[in-house]
Image (cartoon, rainbow, N blue to C red; front, side, top):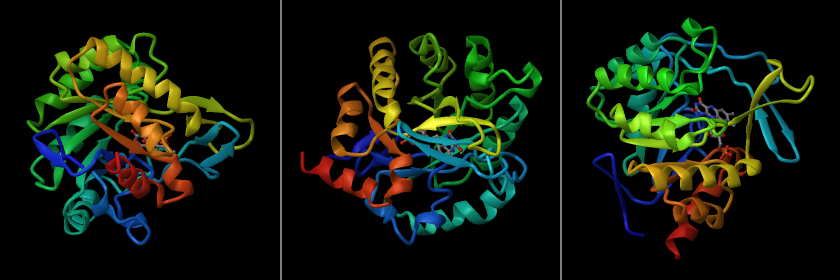
Length: 279
Ligand SMILES: Cc1cc2nc3c(=O)[nH]c(=O)nc-3n(C[C@H](O)[C@H](O)[C@H](O)COP(=O)(O)O)c2cc1C
């Protein structure tokens, strides 16, 4: 398959593991051959270690999955000292994107500034769907002003490529992608989960819906953004087969990421990459 050029790097195929569903690679290394994939997007990194939300953290239902993991991760220092060096040794052909989260603008800036010199990182992916504690818990990416400030702050601390990951419930997703592009983002990732709740099923109460229900939503978001903005798109949401991946690619995505489907069957990302290669 023809390699894809993005972020000044070459991806051997368009298939990534979606953020939060493969940790930092270690968790899946026994069952997934990372080097058969285009790359891996890490779990969100925050400045301090986070234990995350109360169990149960995931619940399945007919339309997909509901999760509230609560950004559980070992924190910036441990990711820098242990997780990313391990991944650098393991993923020789697969590219590494680091997902970044926080409760304040400063959190995002600290994580990016603290990792920006690591050669293993091909790009940062900013999770814009985190609640901003300085704005009463409103998500950073919920308003053009909030998103503008976030991308500007991240852009200021690194010259490395940045992808901005947006929520599918924004009323004007193309307009928000334009804001990200204006502030120097190199790509957008479409889409994050949709807020949802099933009474009593998650320790946290509410969570995010992922899986099959997101496919048509993510494909439309990709199409809308690609028609309005020249910025590359990483398509994610509901992909289980090469046919699903092709929906995103036909809508204009450069790369795709697989999350929930790989949790159910870890062989799916490799199979999708192989089937895409068969044309
Ligand atoms: C268990 C779980 C954890 C996730 N953690 C993150 C995360 O840390 N950062 C992020 O940007 N997205 C996170 N996501 C969202 C996924 O990266 C992806 O956008 C979403 O699940 C849709 O893709 P899918 O339908 O293939 O799962 C998570 C999703 C799941 C299911």
